[in-house]
Image (cartoon, rainbow, N blue to C red; front, top):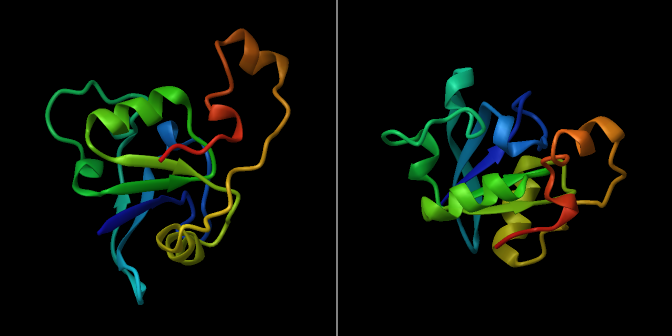
Length: 132
């Protein structure tokens, strides 16, 4: 199973999955340590937020995407591509993959919304809810 973890710095799980352009990709299965097999460093137009849905996307190759936060649009666009999108409070990419496989991944923490995000139609964070 291939699992992509949103990670802008390639060290920690980061949020705003729809705008993320960097992902660590792990080959993972229950009972064995996840192996990092790729790193995606996408141009801005390939972030899911900007992607026009024309043609394949690099995230099409994964089974799951894990991020610190993700909007409903990101989650539904991934589902349409047969990719599970899930959010978490876990900050370590390897631990996030391991606990996802074990069914114990910590859900994303709830947070306060600021007025600017609300005026623009939401915070794009899925309000701490996990999908999967």
